[in-house]
Length: 242
Image (cartoon, rainbow, N blue to C red; front, side, top):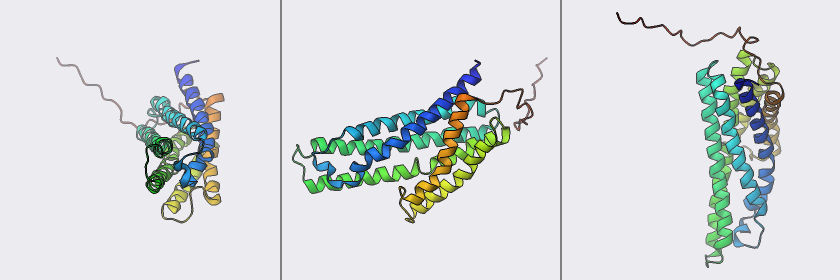
């Protein structure tokens, strides 16, 4: 197995990891995000800690997908390849800020009441931290996948490194997800509403399909996509000084 195939395989596995780790986190967070009296103590934090661990893995795997693919994609479209890496990093950063906000609520729950903190103050702080999580959830997993899908899927569509139906799903799902995020931003509907989840399905199908394809099939070889036009300017050799 050559180096390029290993990189694509690693990216496929990492894509599948992001898909698997992103699903359980929100249900596990449900109690701490919806019950503002959670911070007053008496509730188990095991599920929250498991969700936090999954989201940390999600963030690491998300960055990994872009980093391992960047050397391959930059030869086809360097600007979009860099955009893919950048949006993945922003997405991971937002996820980790959300994790920190939730873990801060866990700390308040464990030590706030024991330290004699005012219950009203604890609840107010908890609400503030939940608000931080909600906004990072929108700006990170809610919007960034649309932007990195546009960068990555457009390269794959142009170069035919995978069957075009796969990046087509991403190119369709990206504007739908972005539109849903904008409606949520302006208060049209909640991010975890039925219509929002429905509009997330195309981008989820894209991420699952590209992950599976890269894991089990890989990209077409350089001989198969030799017809790709390199849009970068040619390198003009500099004559040696006499």
